[in-house]
Length: 382
Image (cartoon, rainbow, N blue to C red):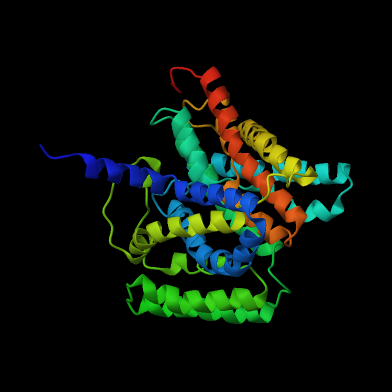
C-alpha cells in the first residue's frame, strides 16, 4: 500500500507557505537570539538589514501590489464601486482611527519624539489576519472575503503612506523623476515589444526604479510597485477569494508563481533581522502601538462601516456587526508591515526596539478575536 507521507508533508509545507509561518519562525528565532546574545545579533542585523529590507522586501511588496492591482481589474473584487467601496472605506477607517489614537496618546504623554511613528498602528498583516479569520469563520462566510479586501486596500494605502511620509533620506525630485520615468518607459517598451519573461521587467525597469527611489530618498523596497501593473497580465486572480480556479499564462502570473517561495524565505529573513528585541525593551511607545492596533482597528472599521451605511452603502449579506467586530480585532494584527514601518519611522536605538515590541505584541490580537468570535458565534459563523 503506498504511503501517504509525501502528500502529508506537501500539505504541511503548503500550509506553512500559505500562512507565512516562516516569518513567524524568523521572528521567534530573532527574539531568542537577541535575548541570548544581543551583541552578536546586533552585529548580524547591521550587516544584513539593507539587503533584506531594501532589496529582498522589493519582491514582498511586488506580490502585494500584484494582489491589489488584479483586484481592480475587470471582474476583480475591487473593480466596481458597489463591491469595493465598503471594505475600502473600512480600511481607511481602520488606518485613520489607530493613527489618531497613537497621535493623541503621544501628545498626552508629552513625547513629541514618538510622533513619527503615527503610521505604525495603521498596518494590517494580510497573511496572519487571514489565518486567524479562517480559524474563526466557516468557509464561505462573507467576513473572510471582506477581510481580504480590507487588507488589500490597507496594503495599497500603506504603500502610499510609506512613499509619502517615510522617505529614506533627503528627497530629490529630479532623481525620482529620472529613475521612475526611465523605468516606466523601459517597462512600456518591453511590453510593446512583446517581451514575456518577467526577468526583463525585474532587471531593467525594476533596477532603474530601485535606483531612482534610492537616490531620490524614498524607500527602495517599493521599486516594483510602479512596474507590476505594466507587466503583461491576465484579467484577475480570484482564487484568493474562493472563486473558481482559472489557468493563466501571462507574465504577471509567472512572476507570482516563481517568487512565491523565495518571498517566504525573504519573510523569514525579515523576521530574523527585524524582530529581535530584548524582552525588557518595553516602554510607553510599546503600549501605545499595541493599544492603537488592538482597539483602534475594530473601532475604526466598525465605525466607518456604520457611517457608510448611513450614506446608502450596504454590507455583504450575512456580515452582521458581531462578525464585523471580530474581523476588526483580527485586522489589528499589524506584524509584517507594522515592523517595516517601525524601521522606517525610527533610527536604531531604544525607541526602535520598544516600537518593534509593540508591533510584535499586536500578534496577540488573535486571541481576543478568537474568543469574541466564539462568544458571538451564530449559525453563520460556526
